[in-house]
Image (cartoon, rainbow, N blue to C red; front, side, top):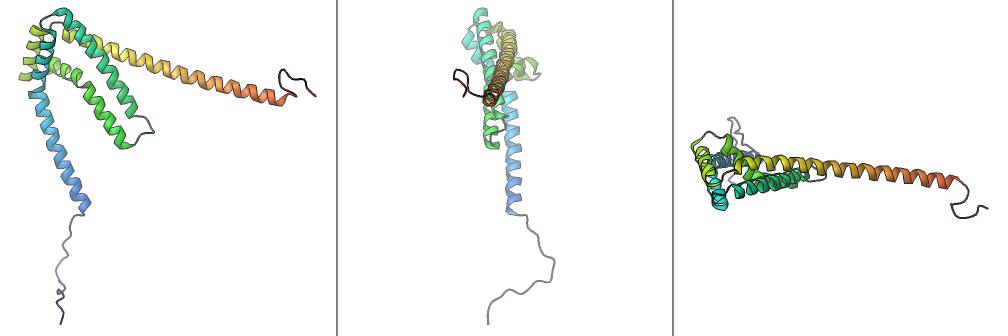
Length: 193
């Protein structure tokens, strides 16, 4: 006699496929990570960033303005360039995600400064007071730098697009010239016949 389980007459218990379990776990981990990042970004980051900038600038208006313009322009230009690379069609989704994440990381200091300026929490107000005292001129100069970075990116995009347009036009004209030269007897510089 063999030990085979007896068939059950009751309703069959349906289990979630393994794929759904994995998705639910990943969603839960993602939500917890997002909450932790939000708490970090609103409670710790504004104070920390304001003190780093304040230590770098050291109460100098000139250093505050130069640091703000430099960080605003370079980081904005870099973040926009990475975002441009992320949205290109020939990239995989994984590469797009990594480039998008890199763009957010590069834009992080400017976004933190924006959070200090627009934020209404205790950390944002503490960061604002720190920047007022230790880094005068930094916030306004960062805005000027961001606008300059966006303008530089737009100009670069225009130059690249016009260059591609000129190349297409030159290739088209060369093709017309080749077809015209192929239709006439002989080639330029050689006698026909």
